Length: 240
Ligand SMILES: [Zn+2]
Image 1 (tube, rainbow, N blue to C red):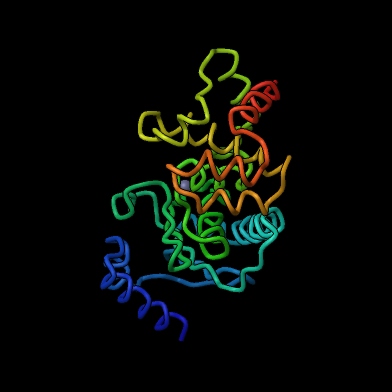
Image 2 (cartoon, rainbow, N blue to C red):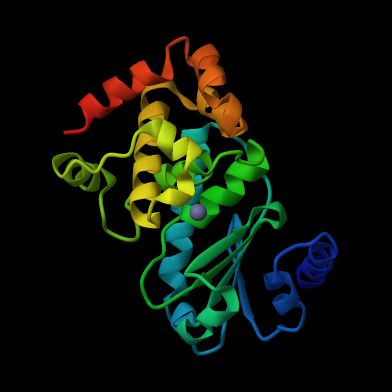
C-alpha cells in the first residue's frame, strides 16, 4: 500500500518538474523495505545497507528526535529513505540528496553511517518552509546533523579556519554561496546557524530560514533586535 502511495507521489513529482530521481524511481522497484517509527528504509538485497540496517535505524531515529527537539517542531510524516549501493552513485549524482517536498532521501551507503543532514532538510522544509538562502538551507542542515561528514567536529574545523585566516564574512555566505568550495561554505554556514540557534533559540531561526537574500540583513535586525554585523563580531570572537 505504502509503495503504491509513493509511486503516485513519484509520478506527481515528475509532472511538477521534480528531479530525474523520481523518474528513476518509477522504473526501479528492486528494493527491500524496512519500516521504523519515522522512516521507511529502502535498500538492495545483500547490500551493505541490508547488513547494517540494525544500526542504521537507531542512528536515524536518534537524529530525528534531536532535530525535532532542537527546532521545537512537530512532524508526523514518514521519511522514505533510499540507500543505494556505492556503484549506483551515478544514479543520484552525489553522496546524498533530499527531495524534501516528497519527504524522501536518496543516499549512497558505503558501510559508514551517513548522519542526519538529509533528514534535517526534509524536516526543516516540512515544518518551517522552503529555505530561501543557501546559507540557511545548508547551514541549518549542517547545524542539526552534528559532526560534519562523519567525525569532523565543526568547532575544530572553525578553529582551523580562524587560525589560517579563512573565515568567510557572514554577508558573503548569504550573498555569494557559489563563490566558495562546498566544505568551507557548509561548515561555516552550519557554525553560524548553530551559534544563532544556541544563543537565541529556534523561533528566530525559523523566521530567518524563509527570508530571502535581499531582505536578510533588515529582517535579521528586526527579529534579533541587534545588527547582523554586531552579531558577526561577537560570533567570530566566540570561535576558539
Ligand atoms: Zn544539504
